[in-house]
Length: 84
Length: 218
Image (cartoon, chains in turn purple, yellow):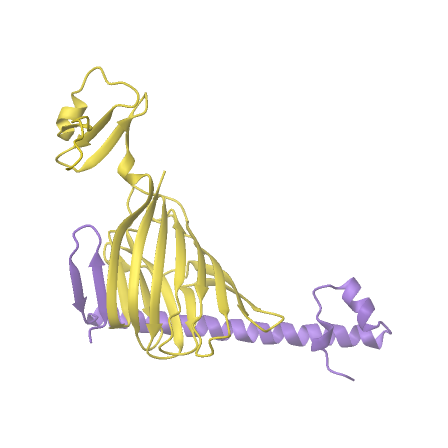
């Protein structure tokens, strides 16, 4: 089975072929870029979660209840925090 | 006995004949025999009525294809496009989209951004995903192979000298028929280039199905 099906909407010509060497190289680069961006995104999410948990735990250490934290900081998901 | 109709159809002639017409009036209709265009005079200019509403530009059926590219489907004729993707996958994967110009996919520059929300019936919450500075739009996910994961893609301004924006709704086919899943996306491509096509591709495996591109005429 060929790599790509190309339909020319203007002429109606349909071409089914394998990728050229240049296209294969570009697609390899593109895939690596996607994977790198996804990895960076996941790391950022994990880092944000750590900060969120730390913030919630600090608020609790100051005597704030879950309900108070929810009202003051709607972005903070209290359930994320670990019990101390 | 066949009913007889009077010969009161539109005036016919070539494009040159129409341009040379005098005494045109509002409501006058003209069929161009060399272009197959049907036009009506709105009082100030000729309007091509073939292009009013949704018009099929092209469609394709494919089998076990990792990339399906449509070239020359975007033009100055339409600003907005409606694309229907109806396919199933050989493996659990994603279908992604890139814009094309002159037969080449635009993947450099990391100019694709999208925000999506995915929800599953029976779950009280969904998944919000934000992805900026990507080199593709991730259209739909495939959880179970051999089950269709259709999508409707609205693209705005791919050919014009503006950013290309999109609004996509996808359904995620499941082996468990009682479970419904959807994913909806808002997408932008932050380069004011002119694109004449697009491609849908699998990050792994391949797709079997159909793809149709329509233009929104106004």
